[in-house]
Length: 88
Image (tube, rainbow, N blue to C red; front, side, top):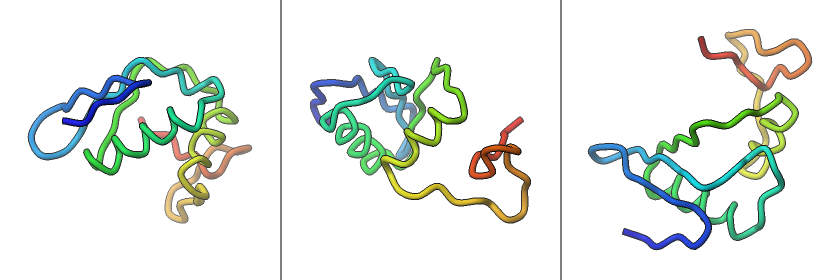
């Protein structure tokens, strides 16, 4: 298991998935924190960062660290943020 300096990564179960703790993604993150989150995603394929309170603008800012958010053509996104598709 990899050692992370800035975040805590806890595998969820089986071959994929991990919880990431000790990070507040509503605030600006250092390059090292973003690198560790990216590494955890590549290692575990699915990550969950629980307990976050994000406004749509902050959610998009975080997502842009990993690529360009896309508008999903088959489900309507939020009115002012069409890249964000609500999951109910």
